[in-house]
Length: 68
Figure 1 (cartoon, rainbow, N blue to C red):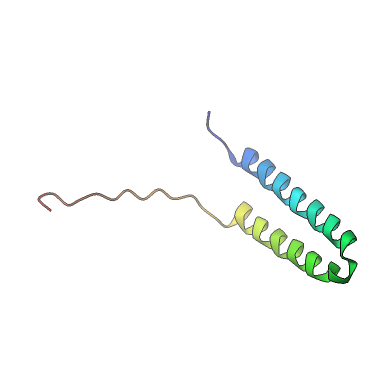
Figure 2: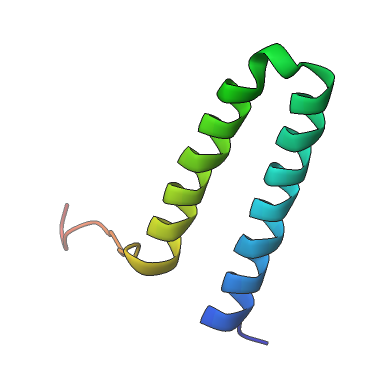
């Protein structure tokens, strides 16, 4: 069974929500570092956006030249 864009988007969303929840838990434990955790979540949001829109899968096949 082949995974499509909708499946990948769901996986990305689940991973991001796990990151967000963990950062929130850490921010509650360490309120003095809340800004660090929020900045990390914001950076992850940008990276997940890139994964969802700008990254293209490519398959590159390499082989030996004949006689080489």
